[in-house]
Image 1: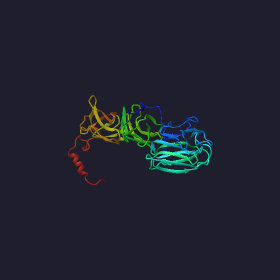
Image 2 (image 1 turned 30 degrees about the vertical axis):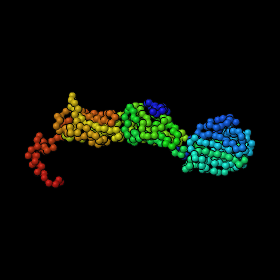
Image 3 (image 1 turned 135 degrees about the vertical axis):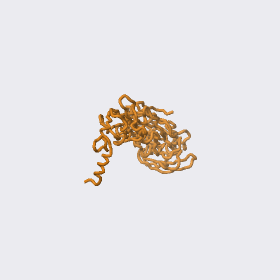
Image 4 (image 1 turned 90 degrees about the horizontal axis):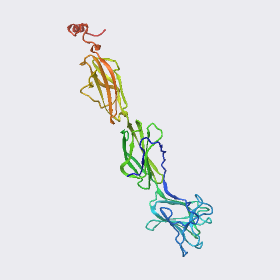
Length: 416
């Protein structure tokens, strides 16, 4: 089951596009949440703070402090409580619930600048994997980067120790680095698919395979541009191709639309997938160019015009039929009652009228699409065999006979 919402009908909300970031760290702690002097151990999710004692015989805790020289954000930072002799070798330790590839923080000393600090990092087995000396200067501004976005080793514990134990202090601790955006993939409908009301199921993948999931949204807009209309949003991932949404098409305008799936992880990284689809609400075009209403016909007649739907994407078939007054519709060509190719400004059918009695007839061209929509055009014409004349009757005797042949033979040869 997916948790979120899906709008029925045309949504009134227009969603804004979130540009993907190069990288992000999901958790950044600025230590502004608690009062100065508060002991900090497990208040922040994902990390445990402690201050292992050196020469002290009683517990020492990390506490919220208000350092001289300010901090990289706000006024508060995390330091070590007063109580043990100032020069005892106590240190600040952080242990992460999940092994980290990249940890950053700003470093300084609560009272005076210029103290040397030793920063060490360990893996889950307790092996030292990082060690570096830092001299921060005044305030809590010195940026420390342990590991990196592509660092191969995993950090479980970070420790900060000064050479004389003068209250090491940190601010803006960031971890849970996520270097890759999530996956957004629409598997169906596919590009240029014809979609029929009342609804279509959207299948695909919405997942962050290496990080914490945020949410996904589905939107549409006309392919020509304009505002995106929100279809729905969910906060549960789909990591194998499957059901994502049901798109209600009843109120979606006829024609081409772009369908966009946007997936965002907990770090704010996002990605999207777009397919262009044709929403088929009506049959597009049926047009008769020839014959026109009241046209007099004889012989074999080319029926000319256009039958097309959805640029051919939704087209099914068309028929060309005729009927005398008071009769049923019949195909103009009994050997081909249906035509399965679109025609644009071309020949739709050939109608042999030579076996029809003179008189008034209806002529109809009707098209159907894959969604069951239909459209037709009808003209009224008159079949009159004499309109074509008798081409072999050269002497207008009313029949083609030997005299007509002699006339031809007497004029045999090149034309002057």
